[in-house]
Length: 477
Ligand SMILES: Cc1ncc(COP(=O)(O)O)c(C=O)c1O
Image (cartoon, rainbow, N blue to C red; front, side, top):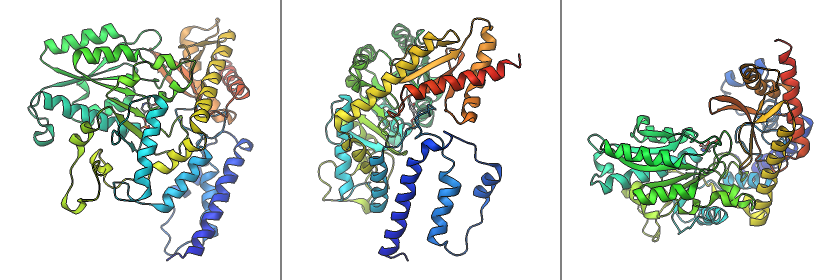
């Protein structure tokens, strides 16, 4: 059994390695593949019979694992939606692990801090909040399952059907709506909750990736005419391919008119509302019944923290509360335990890194970081537009710049092939990291700017790396 002195030594050494890792990011390639022998060695290593010496243990992690990062952390990393962790958030995560309570509930510091962290997130995005109306989750996928689960219960209860007791067999057919660009986690939630993806209506988008409101209204009317029960609309506050923000106010109107649950997926883009230049796009987010938002994305909290906010906390408790005898806590107070508001029983203490990542910057600092990202994304958009070899695939609404290689002397098919191939080539170059997607049927490179440390130089490096990648490939034509 480790004593306190061992803990001191290993944690100090680990903190030093973590700081060195962050300090050395710029000296290494943004990303490099894990060498084949190391892949096999890491995955296939034998279970040690006896414990490793502390130094060997840490040096193995440093040499064989930390030396091969995903790349997020580096300012020239623009892949997916993976954050550079904020140092205060890393510190919070370390302290949370040291404390290690279950935040199902109980009387310990983290449960109170989580109340503040959730409220702060709501305040940052201007969402109304009452205590208990939200909780931290493992990510936005889980937040979405929680929100859609609550919407499902409410809709079926209104139709006289207790889904918790009776399940779905024989229940009215529920239908949900999201745009063609809505994140796959909505589909997963709909599938998992037994509604079936055939009952997730993919509403067409306009040329810039926004859900078409008239098409939504038509789809709802058609589904009602068939006897189905429309119950939820999922709007996007920042789509994953291009960062488009749906017309949230209009979606809220539709939901109010039709009596539907209005869910906003702000997992990636919700915090964009903090940039005064684009805040207007988010009008109506505050009218949602639920919002999914990921602290582990634009808030730069180390991975593993999402958040669901709801307008009415009763909806969560009515959906999830079950208190077995062994968990009765007469001292829990009016709100009860977090485990009554979501799926997890044992819950990690997620609030410390969230609280720390916000507290270290304050509202102003967080807003400045968000604004730095949106400005750099717009700058990249301008650079793309100025360059005859590139074209923007969609307007830069938040902090994703989606673009294509499209010089005039290539056919659209050739340009698409090169665009698709460029992402892997840029990644392999180690100079920058970008990923690709498909928008309105055509490949795009999507640079996601959620690291405020990224600036003009970094997006310049990205465009150079793309240019180099496609030039090498063009010679093959
Ligand atoms: C718009 C959007 N929604 C939902 C998710 C899912 O979030 P998570 O990966 O935290 O489950 C993502 C992840 O990239 C996203 O970008």
